Amino acid sequence: MKNLALLPFLLFLAATTSPAAPPAATNACVVFLGDGITQQRIYTRYVMNFFALHEPGVTRSFRNAGLVGDGECDRAPGGFKRLQRDVLDLAPALAVVAFGMEDAGYRAFDQARYDDYLRNLSAITTELKGHQIKAVLMTPGCVADSFQRNGLDGAGYNALLRRYADGAMELARREGVPVADVHALIESFTERCRAAHTNLALIPDPTKPSPAIHAVMAFGLLKALGCEGPASDAVLDAAGARVLDTRRCAISALSASSNVVHFVRADRGFPVYLDPEARGVAVLLPEAAALNRYGLTVKGLAEGNWALTVAGQKVGVFTAAQWKDGIDLAASPGPWQVLGERVNAMSVAAEELYNHIWWDVKTMWWLPPEVDAERRRLLASTLRILTERDAERARIAASVQPWTWVLTKQVQP
Image (cartoon, rainbow, N blue to C red):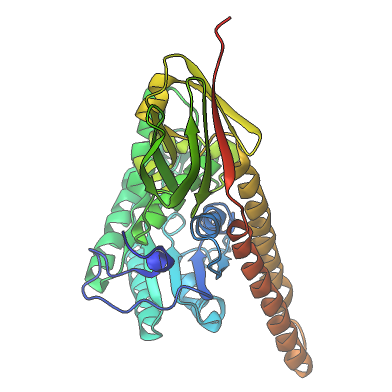
């Protein structure tokens, strides 16, 4: 397995033409440059949560430079124009570039708009590479089946967006940078949702996908960044009171009887916190299940139902057959959800604060030149405070003490 402390910057993947030494992971800055979907601050927050929980104690700063449109700023041409202010000024180690939904214009294919999109996406990539900033591209997503605008329905506009996605992927191959094809992931995910008769894949507005779709985007991006799973996994043998296998965790004090299995588990990673309406994504998205698995397998249990409690908190009741096959507990209640809620609250606060910094301090264009030095000092001071909070968020999961896990056989009524 790759060194997890370096995973987000292992960009010498299949899409990269030549290996490059990744920058130090600790204290690295990541900027999300994109449109109104990025400005929703959902998939970006899930990515923040992922790293804080999967790599406890490693400090990274995430800055959201997504903007909803005035006709240009949420398209690739506007992204290139504001690249210096919104990305280069922050001197990040990595920039995620996500445009296309607005570039296509919600109308029939226009060659000039398409060319403009690719030309400016290429210019952004070239500029980032020139400043030694790692870049990863994201393809545009999808609209809902119910979409109707300018004579196009959902299927028609998604076909057009697929054309933009193909263009972005070809550009990424040509430039030697990773690309997350979130368009294809969303399409396959929504098909699985239809087959499963679930409404997880709701896209209520073309520019406002649901948290479930944002989760799909986040896992697609994490895969493109070279991240690996699981969060943590363990395989035990109750009959022999043995630890058969562990990944990113350590098991101690294991004891087993005919009706109780008891052990202490110290995890080196925890499942990413997703909003409740997005937690079912892993069932239908293999990429999420692979990256985020928080597993437990217990072989040799007597037939019947077994209840799990962790750190005194009830998790659920599963059959011996289910425990033998292994259970992914990432979306189940447990102390890991409480931990995730703490991390997520800090991620929300960090994105809100940076949004205020951007609107209320960085872009105070109306101030007279005489006070610009004071504005810059205020900006620097606020960014320093935000970076300190980034370090605090990274420490939350690192401070977790090992939890006691207990499996108890349920008495039949």
